Image (cartoon, rainbow, N blue to C red):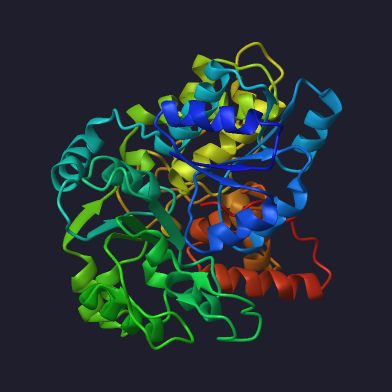
Length: 466
């Protein structure tokens, strides 16, 4: 755990830092949010920020988003000022911690963040061999490729490997190659010097340098442009990076984990992905099963997410009812764990019973049958409808109602409705929607912009944290 403390709180802030150090955290202190941003851009990574409530919390969080730095922010202030606490939460802080610091409270906050980052639920037999393989190769320095459908938990597995490795005390840095525009990804990975391009107002340390002595995750590496693939290959071979605008290479010591939801061998055949890079990344391959192939984990994950979002939204925790559990287990989960998480977030907010009822679990039209033979997700038959209708076996019979609803529409209109409805289902999260739809985030962004120009009501964008 790397903790960044921001602000001057009459000496109490140093007490919080000492408590965190006693709990095993690595602590860095910054005078204000500007200094904190500068430290983060220059490679001083952090997993959590505790910020004086008097600081400009909203601007700090917006700057983090703009710089694609994903880190929870905890506001803290002297005594219990209710108005200050409410304001901090409204500005985007995840929690409010009163000072002088309570040792147990600080420990609980650190433990909660660590647990949220590290939770991996894998009790189904389908996951046994996968976890055993991950545990066996984790202590090595081998590059790992984790494959599987979108939403199967590839980042969680990569964190598991990092925690079991010899680099567990070093940083774990994740980069979503699909979510960052092509013209910025090189700078994001390798860094840049001041004046290297328009907008480069200062030196920035890249993610490879930030991950020095630790692990870097290249999430959805298959989305990387071919020209950048060549530069990545050289970094892997030479173990050094050259910042944009510089001629001086910098040595880096990192373990690389990559993920992909595509068939990379086919991408290599099509010339979309470099064969030499594929073999460099695919030293060890860990294939993650789809959620529908691990039914024992569905109810456990559903309860975990229901509890998580009950806490996040300040509503009572509820146990899944037997009917709700049956409903979850009968669904095909095309979007896998990510779709289940969004579904449970929605369910805990609209539930009206003492137990979380089946009627609160709204599922997507056109979902395929959970126990159907393995087949491409896009071609699978319908298993459940919207609004809590009971799931029925699809067998080999088409869904007449679904087909009739499409009659009279153009292909473009059908595609538009599918994209907009999927984005709405994902609560506005574009990265999640793109993964479920099987398209790149760039393609989704372009289509949504075109729909907006045509006057279509597009769901508001939520935080795109994979």
